[in-house]
Structure formats: structure tokens, C-alpha cells
Length: 488
Image (tube, rainbow, N blue to C red):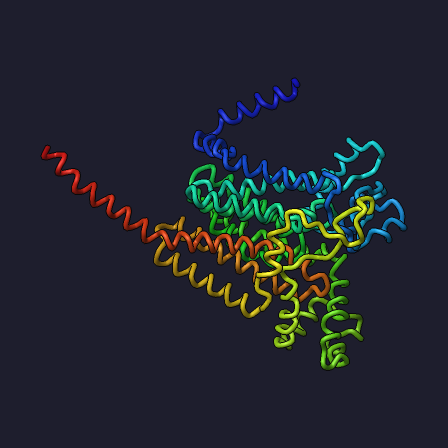
């Protein structure tokens, strides 16, 4: 209790010593009633799925080792591993000596915290994956709060629409089932929402005052954690760097602005040069060759020769060069993978003890994912046309309808995110072959955010002329009222 009192006193002294504008900005970070209501409903729905029997999670597809091995966590037996892989969720794991291999992901520090908590509360000396689920849930709720907070100044209708969209999509079992697992999709989901929310807050802040530095540093940190979550997320690097450049506070410190914008792409280059993804690079190249290129090849022998399969094996560079020489083959391959882009992986969601069969899928809170699977476009040409049309319309709105820099930047954030979706799709379908629905998970979620921003922009464009006429009429009435009152 004494330590808590000391911390509270220190925080109070810190706030009193801060700039008054900065103190007001910190106070505005507190959730209001609408945000609290949404967050409580969201927490209850997700906690029900993750912690109430039969608990929901995601079965291992043999990728768990990327996180488990360096963390010092393993299955309790080989038989248990063989019985659960692909089919059942396993919740209890043994603590073992960590292995030396590296895999760069921002899910690792989250797992590190979960490991400490599990050691403190475990009664049987085992690691419980639900503790990791709890850590992911706490961060997820924080990220959703940041996202909701970014719409607080947008008007009641917009806020209610965003709140409804969040409650519909963000509780979906096809998203949150990853929390009770050792997949890195959890970190991708968490830091995508926090990055988009902080980007919106940076725009609304107009780059002024101490709060602008606070938000910009938060955006850069969240952007780093997002691209580090999975190697596919490096495709968003141009968009993240663009944000770091344009959201920089009004300041003459140009060097810091350049460093902030260049840091993300430079670190990505370092990660690949330092072989931070060495665990997966060679495997991905072999899988793409064996399961995508050769089965769909009219001349397999020539393709093997071109890809260097006889001279030490294929590589990601050779695959990229191969598709650059055969763009029609790449387009045909992308069309095939596009059919699975808005689906979900058919791995088991439940434990063996639940009494449900192997590969049983949870249908709780899955209305949004089922809607997308049935109605989202499965034709790549159509999706490309929709992205292009959205970008053109958003550019026209920013040019002719939006008043001021803030409104224009807010409109153009959607097309920038759409560009990230396109780059993510290109990178993923080029270098990943099997498990397309899982590999395109963050693309799937980012498309949902693009759709939300497109709907909000369309609604704003529809009511903007009416709002201007209303403001003009109000102003005209005021002009006529002044002389009448003066004469009286």
C-alpha cells in the first residue's frame, strides 16, 4: 500500500510539473461513457470465449515452435503433440530450457510477461496458454480504446456507427481465437488497431503542442511493434514511414523527422540482413516451389531449372525474379489465392476434454466472419477495381469537398491503408503457398478498416453540401439580424 501511495504521489507531482496543455491532453485520454460501455461489452464477450469452458483457442499447425522454443515452453509429451496438432487446442505446457534460435516478433515480449505471470499463479508448475490469452486481451482492449478515442470529436452519429462496427467485428471468434495460441496474429491485430488509432489522433491534433510529440512517439512505437509482429507486415513499411513523416510535430528538428520516417524501412532491411526470419525463409521458398509453382506449371522441369532447384534449392529472391519474368503466372496464382483471402483456417478451436470432435470450429460471435466469407469479393480484378475507385473518390473528396488540412488528411488515411493492403497481398501471395487464409489474416482485418473509413468518408461527403447550406443560411440570418437589433 505504501508503494502504491508513493507511485500516486509521484504521478501527481509529474502532472503538476507538466505543461498545462499536456496535462489537459492526458486527461482527455480517459474514456467517456460510450467508450467505457463498448469496452466493457467487448471485454465480456471475448473473456467468455477465452476463459469459460469450453474455452476457445487455435490448434497448432507446427508454427508454435517459433515462439515456444526461444521462450522455453514445450508440449508435455510427444504423444500429446501428435494428438493435438491441427485438431485440438492444448492449454497446458511444460517449462523447458530455451533454444538459441531467433524469430523476430513483437509477440515475444507479450509471451515473456505471460510466462512470468503463469509462474506466479500456476499451481501445477505448467504454463497455461490462457494467461497469454489474458495478456493479449488486455492489450487488445487498450488498442481498441485508442481506436475509439480517435473518433470522439467526429459527432454522435459517427461515434455510434464506429462503436457498432467495433462490437460486431472485434469480438469475432475468427479474430480472438488467436489470443489463446502461440501464433503471432495476435500481436498483428493488436498493434494494427493501435497504429491506425494513433494515426487518426495525430491528424486531429494538428501537430501542435507537447501532446503532438506524445502522439507521434506513440505512433512510431506502435508502428514498430506492428511490422515486427509478422514478417508479412513489413509490406506496410512505406505507409508507416509516410505517416511518421507527415505526423511529425511542427518543429525545425528536421533531422529527427528524417530519422523517424527512415527508421522503419531501415530496421526492416536490417532484420532481413541479420537473418531475423531465418527460421522461415528457406521453408517458405521450398513450400512455394513444391505446393504452388510446380503443381500449376505447364513445364515443371524448366521451372525447376529457372528457380535453381538443382543448384542448392530455391530462395525467396529467385521466386520474386521468377514471377517478375512470368507476370501472367503470378496473376493466375493470385486469383487462386484470392478465393481464400476472406476465409479462415480450419484448425480446431477446442480442447480434447471439451468432448467436441477434431477440428471443431466455434460459431460463437462469428456473424461478421461468416458474412465476409459469403459476400466479400473473391475475384482479384474486382477487388483491385474497388481499391482504385476508393482511392480516386477519396482524392476527389480531399481536393474539392474537405475544408482544411485536417479533413484532407483524415480522408486520405483510408487510401494509404488501402495501399498497405495491396502491398501486403502482393508480398503474402508471392512468398507464401499453403495456409492462405491464415497468412492473409491481417490483410483481411485491414480491408475491414478500409471499408469502415470508406463508409465514413461517403457519409461525410453526402452530408457536407447540406451542412454547408445550413451554415450559410445560419450566417445569412445572423447578418440580417444585426441591423434589426441595432435599429430597435
